Image (tube, rainbow, N blue to C red; front, top):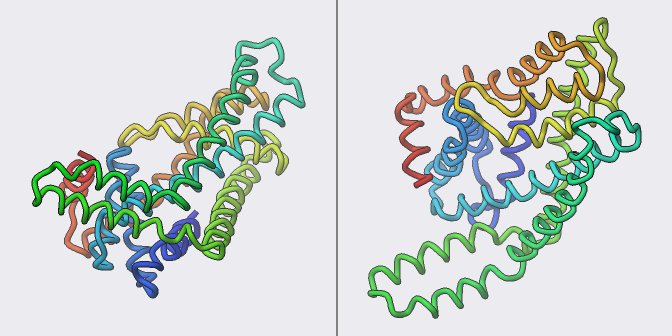
Length: 292
């Protein structure tokens, strides 16, 4: 899983290129590791630690890096929806849940994934073509504000638009897409290796692993500070209900999945944060202040 953080840092460098053509890869990797540590420890407010640290390290506007974070989330959601759609298709084809209490998930899930995919596509297109026009219209509507407040909003919106500049380049979008594929391929490889470690207790094919990953990706959206949450529950349910794994074995597999994908980064992230003069309270304060 460690390699996925490097891929995320490289992808962020592509988003950052319009503002900083040659960012420090180490700065991006360090901020990524610290940021994911903050997510595991503090839940979703920790999401904002990474863009804040990157903005500070690379000396670019913080607002621009929030825009980059939003772009990254759009690509991750697109990939997650693709994985979830694959998982739904696979389970529907096998008919393993037909007539069970989980059958409604398959019926409703397809529509949800379809609508969500259209929404993600529309969001990406709006970034690509409408960011600057929307900024202009917003500034026209806000002309009534006092000059100091208006200039502050103008500065913030300009920084946000600068953060999404990379979406105007077809080449940059292709590179980001390839990095996203590589990231998810590495995650799938991690799950596959974990499944091989449990091969004496149950057997999952590569397609089964991808199906499992599709459902778990959606479950990971629920993040309880320090203890995870949705990922472990969904993983255990999918293994028991879809693949017929015993509950105790499924629970162990789910916990190891959470440890490998979330908890393993904590020692490295904390060591890097201490090296940079950040402690537990500093990370929590950054997450809370920036998210409010």
